[in-house]
Image 1 (cartoon, helix red, strand yellow):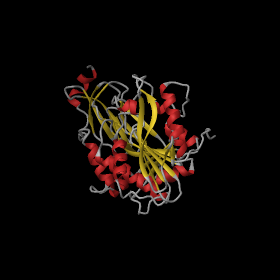
Image 2 (cartoon, rainbow, N blue to C red; image 1 turned 45 degrees about the vertical axis):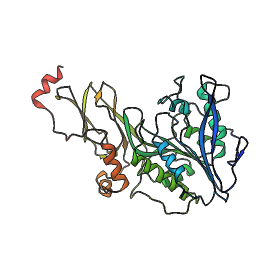
Image 3 (cartoon, rainbow, N blue to C red; image 1 turned 135 degrees about the vertical axis):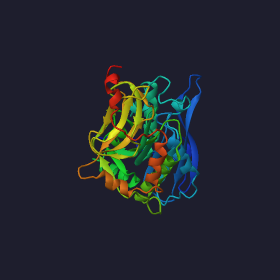
Image 4 (spheres, rainbow, N blue to C red; image 1 turned 60 degrees about the vertical axis):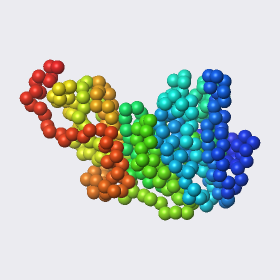
Length: 369
């Protein structure tokens, strides 16, 4: 069921008119600070001379997830991004209150990305969410939202969307990531509620917090351009990977014991069932336990902090569909193509060790630590 939302013109923003063929920076009042000053988020609107769909592209909904901010700034500065029809709304920072604090959360510790569609009489997060819905989502036809992994984790770039919605599947596949994770998203999430309001939306998960990583930005920019090409808004040839896999099931592999990890895999790597993922050692390097893959999978995310306690997340695996061969996908990757460079760049966030087997000399002693 679609949520009630009043459509608005992309050309009119609270008294500011943006004519067809014009590009303009505007500021949208989103809230107030503790000092009572109005908080305004900067937005860039670019319209074609010809009518067509409007795509909103947003980042930093979690204020410390700024890879998307870097990508949107690059799109804004790209003077060759000449739309053949429609309009694009570029928002480098949605959650300015959290961004200014280098934080995932709002000052009241609420998660803005669990507060949509919001209400004008609710909490700070709920009021901001309602304004974003009424002023940005209401002007759009499609949405792309950029995210990263949480603190002390990294994600190999993957698109996420509710593929049961045909137009979501269309833009998810067009974006051009090699892995697409199918799912609605959590209750109150921006893209889930935008879809419920009839605005098909996807997210890109890629990289780490508090960083602007060059290959993640390249992936994001390429993806936005690919979507615009798919929607006949940009006259160019799309750039696509050699393969594309839809992930239906994901699983976090968690530490069984406290200790210090030696990683055997890197983000974006394909692994086979029972393949070693990480060895948990004590501080002297003696093995305590070995974490292995429960099924054939791609490593879509992992911790970058080797020190763990029992139950902490280590590797986020996306289960490969039946018949998908990890080794075949490996052969498609070239070191100098974007997918190959992504694996290499993200691997610099963790130290990879070759798995050497059980340390039999210390096995009994370690079990009594």
